[in-house]
Image (cartoon, rainbow, N blue to C red):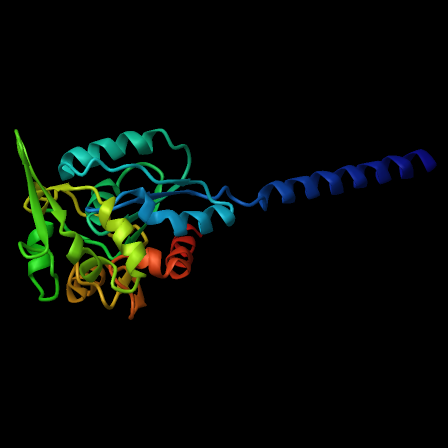
Amino acid sequence: MRIRSLTAAVATVLLTVTGATSAAATHQPKPKPTIVLVHGAFADANSWSEVTKKLQRDGYTVVSPAVPLRTIATDTSYLEGVLAGIPGPKVLVGHSYGGALITELAGTADVKSLVYVAAFIPQAGETIGALNSQFPGSEIGPDTTSTISYPGGVDLVMKPDAFRWVFAADLPSRQAAVLASSQRPVSAGVFTETVLKSAPAGLPKYAVLPGKDRAIAPAAEQFMAKRAGAKIVQAPGASHLVMLSEPSLVTHTIEQAAR
């Protein structure tokens, strides 16, 4: 009897340990997705600096690639190569022109959600130039931009004295001046190039909409976000560079999308 009792006790302990181990394995937290931050035109990856610091502090891996700003097709192809080197789930975040790029990339394997920050959310067959002129409010045009002509193309660059008014009215003037001096020109052709893909309807989408945007008309951003079925986050007093003026709000939205 004692041997049987001892055997039964050992079996019970083994079953308990095995069950606990299985339960622990079942409830292990899933790895956090990599956050891919795609900057827009007239900018570089430094526009994500404040958001990047907050995301890294919260344990996220962040990739902020340098977008070529040549054509939508070229930039998308380049970013496909970037994504191919990132294992596991990914959240794509696009600012401004970068919204068109993450839309094209939305069907890439392991992309779990999209976050649009003061961004274009085009559909297949549209151009971002037409979307931006559909509603009044954008002040990007001949009065605020200069052209850089070179053999084979024409680039656009924001005039230094217009940069803060159009992009960064809620940032300190000195900070806006630094951003203006380090801006990267964009090929003029991106505004008339046709977008080839729409983001999958079932893919979760979030949109941060700054109310004082003068680069993309706020009404256009509202229209595109509602049409895409995105969860809308309002930033009523923010400029186009909302990720620098309100980084906590933008970071919180990205982390919502990541969960």
